[in-house]
Length: 69
Image (cartoon, rainbow, N blue to C red; front, top):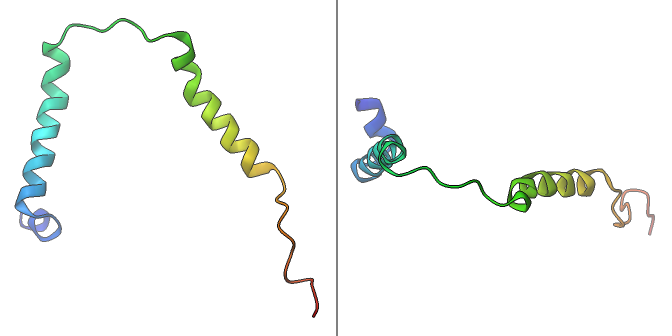
């Protein structure tokens, strides 16, 4: 416990413990939710594919190493 207090303040440690408690207890107490719409299920896939596309497309920024003045 002393190692945790060296890295985190008592307040932040308390907040993390309370959030952990809520994450463990609330799913047992709350009723199950209906499934989300189909578009929201594919939203992470669309975002990831857009990020991969942007990562693999060449940029239009000129290469400053090869330009001589």
